[in-house]
Length: 212
Length: 285
Image (tube, rainbow over all chains, first blue to last red):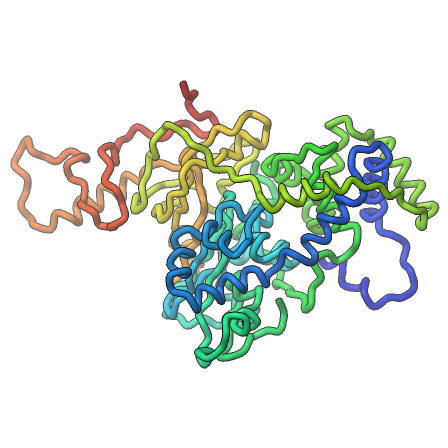
């Protein structure tokens, strides 16, 4: 998990890693034997690099903030409500959305592997799949959230959802103050991936982090 | 299996280190491995339960020392070799060739209809809910005790949640049972529940205040928490009137009425007849 810190800034070519060579060997053999075609691989990579990501989840949340009837449907049957916006598919077949309130804070994880709601959040970040997050978030959620810069009041109940089956969870963050006049699109732009996982809150009228 | 993949509650792994502006794939090969796994060896995707079990059976040191996609690559390579799609020698030989001449051009082939079909399948997903005749043994609001199961095969009952008391808060209907499906032994769907555990129940005095952990658990991982049921019965009999001899309440009549509004009342609730044995669901007619 710390093996990919150095790549980007180097301009001189490094020898390919053993994993890169082996992956290339397997792909080239499968292509030569006619078992797969190169374009399928290209297409799937492009789909998860460009089409499926946390902006989908942000759109769902922005709709829920602006449309109370949609929010009710979302909390009752998240899979169907998310499908209304055109999102769904692998690793999102059975969605449950968890509403944060002033007294309850939800955070999602997968201690056994790295289950994550792909159709609404994309593929998980490396830290979500890392040994520290998977081992610690169920045991000391407040300490982990503190490291993310989120200090929960002692009066707030923290609920950690360990995705041990095929139910996939997404957090519905609290709508920040001072956003009454924003449009749904502007609201979606405020919502970060980390808030949808539950390791961040949204600051008043602006995103707490620029990512997602 | 009690493997190193079962990380919940372990110590010593250090701080969580988020990365700013993280790409979806850090290196090109990660995306290729991800996509190859979506296809499986020779166009038959590996069932996700089987893929997970392959990953958790990796050598423990290798598991801990590998990145996420290195684990996927290792599991995928094994699956491809076991399926007879490629041989280990073939893969090794081609790897050496590529190492000697890294800039070799890859063959490029296409089949746009198949590519669209694969993308369509990913967008559609593959639900794991199934219709079964067996009624749910538990209902929302039931107190349960997780079984102390230690199977050698695949399981989704984390070690940290075995032999623990919790409350059923969601019922998801019947879902494919990974403990059999991962081994090619059939789907044997069972009712799936979300069970809420107080942090103190899981971690004792080391628990953080006001914290709960919610875990999705299949019916055969659970027993009724009889101690809790008894306690509840006592609590709901506040009047100190002792019952006349011979009228001591049976468990079925001492049931507290709808403490949790959503909980449907079930006739057999405190039955000591436990749910079916783990991993060996009853045959259905």
